[in-house]
Amino acid sequence: GYVVDSFDFYWRDWHWPAFNLADIAIVLGALLLVFVGLLRKENPNAELDGSS
Image 1: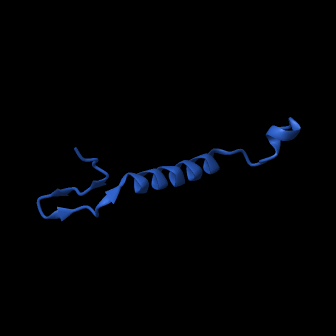
Image 2: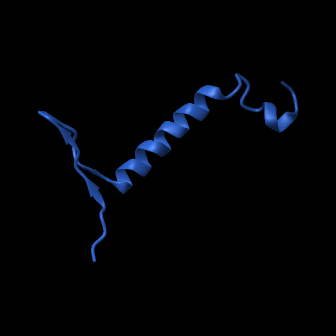
């Protein structure tokens, strides 16, 4: 009868900061933007004018 939204992990004396699903979505989105930005060609207009 409840929804798990926050996660709190620990192992022995090591404790990871608590986070929720929104935090996961924000971090994954930011990582995706960085990853796509790093993989882009040097000419960002290459798709628009057909040149490479």
